Each structure stands twice: as C-alpha cells, then as structure tokens.
Image 1 (cartoon, helix red, strand yellow):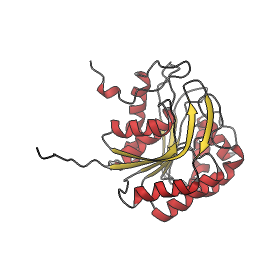
Image 2 (cartoon, rainbow, N blue to C red):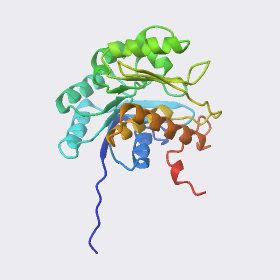
Image 3 (cartoon, rainbow, N blue to C red):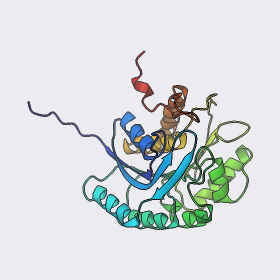
Image 4 (cartoon, rainbow, N blue to C red):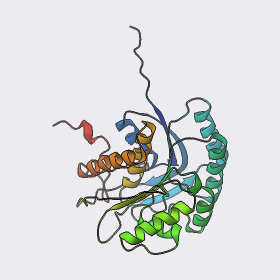
Length: 269
C-alpha cells in the first residue's frame, strides 16, 4: 500500500530538557504536537528535575549546540522558533551567533530564570549579558513578573508597573512583550505591548498547584500559533486559552507541582 503523506508545519524549540516531562523541551514538543505541528528540538542543557525539585543541570558543549542548529536549518527550516532556558553566558553567545547566521522567523523568547521551586536556571550575573545579546531577537518576549523585575531593574506591584516594564523591555530591542501576571498579588492579568497598542489580557486564576511548565507551554503555544500564520494578538489570545485549559485539566502527578495536560483536547468525554 502506498504511503499517504501529509505536510505538517515545522517548528523548533531551543531550550533545556526536563526529564520528568512537564517543562522544557518535552513540554514544547507536546505543545507543538497538540497544535498539529512538526516539532524539532535543540537541547542546550540536560536538567535533572521533577515536580518537586531540580537536582542538577548539565550544559551541552557549544560545538554540539552549533551542530544541532546546523542540522535543523540546513534541512527542515522552521516556521517559528521558541527559545527557552539558556543556562550560561557561553550558551547565550552561541545561540546569538546562530540567530544572526540563520535568521529564523517568528522567534518567541521565554527568559527562563527560575524553576517553579526557585532554583536559578539562568545565572543572575548573566542577566545583563542576556539583555544585551538575545532580547533584540525576540518577536515576542514572555517574562513573568520576577523575570521582568530582573530585566528591568525595578519592582512590579500593579498594572501600571506591568505596562512600564513592558515598555522598558521593548526599549531593550524586543518587538513585542507579553508580561505574564500570574505572580501578581492583585490579579493574574497579562500585559501585551507591541510598541503601539497595549492590551490588558484578563486571566482567570485557577486554584491548583499543578502548574509545572506553564511558562514553557505558553511560549511554545504562541510560537505554534505564529507558525500557523495567526496575528500577534490572535496567537497570544489562543495560546492563553490553550494553557488555561491545560491547567484546568492538569495532571495530579508527582509530589510537588504537577504538570499541565498538554493533550486535554484528546480526553474522552
């Protein structure tokens, strides 16, 4: 019988791994599949973690990162690229040089600095280097409040501060910013700013501890929607809806913060 092939849109994640499957590249690939895309990956760091803690991080040598990126772009060019955890200045420089070389489209950068339990995944002394090298490549930058505070250098307490921070991040070179409000005390609303329009995206706070990998999942969902040709506002709005449901149907696995359910759409009624 002749094979009946179909083309899926290719999309790439450049990030660290999560052996427990809830965050990092594993979450990104699940999200890409849930959006009916062909997911590819470049591993920057191998992270030994689970729902409760991070045990260790091993950064991949930069020559191996170079070769992974070359292998992807010389053969299957992605329609969007999500960039997550970058755990060292050397890896930041490596990724920067490859972005300059291959000029990927629809770049979504999630500035992953901390694991859910507070473990530092980006050395804070490298934050300035990250700002100077990588932020300018972001078509969409997706920091949460703690990350935005480190990048901007001031405290974010309310909606006015979120808007101020989004504008400051655009001044660093990002083309648009989605400042996630999940860590806010008053509400979970996000701020989306593209240099022209400010959108306050109201968010329902779901009472659950099972939120492991939500930031990775949101950024990869945005990248998925951009790869499919959606506008920025549509891509972000639909990604937020996807993550809301992934949290609502989250999985009560592990001893800590359980993972979201990337495939909730396929649950049997």
